[in-house]
Amino acid sequence: QVQLVESGGGLVQVGDSLSLSCTASGRSFSSNYMGWFRQAPGKTREFVAAAFWNGAIYADSVRGRFAITRDNAKNTVYLRMASLKPDDTAVYYCAADLIDRSAWSFRFWGQGTQVTVSS
Image (cartoon, rainbow, N blue to C red; front, side, top):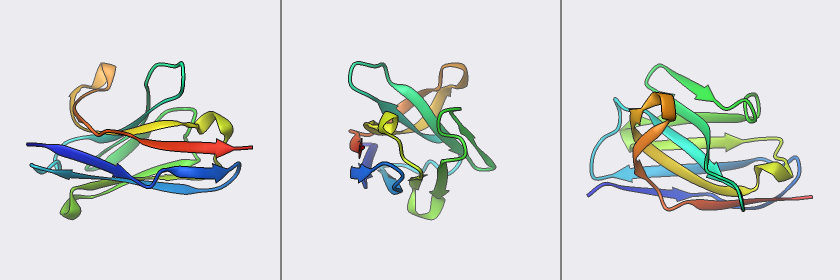
């Protein structure tokens, strides 16, 4: 059974940095995309970033502030967030095994971790 477990969320101030991690169990995702999404209150879930073995892709809203990395040996993907803004407040979800890149649809999802940026 595949499980994705996120950690690292919390309450921070505007301009602060925060790192999230997501560790997968049940199978290896070393040759698959892993990614991060977020959902703010009253909004639909949105793509944040995704990492493949040879690169990364970012949403325009986070490019230059967020960095996604992965450690395949640990089956873990990280999201380093800097210069945080109130608009970054959301539940952040980890995802693995890309099904449809045009829709950023993933097969497996974590339970989410809350990030709150206070002004």
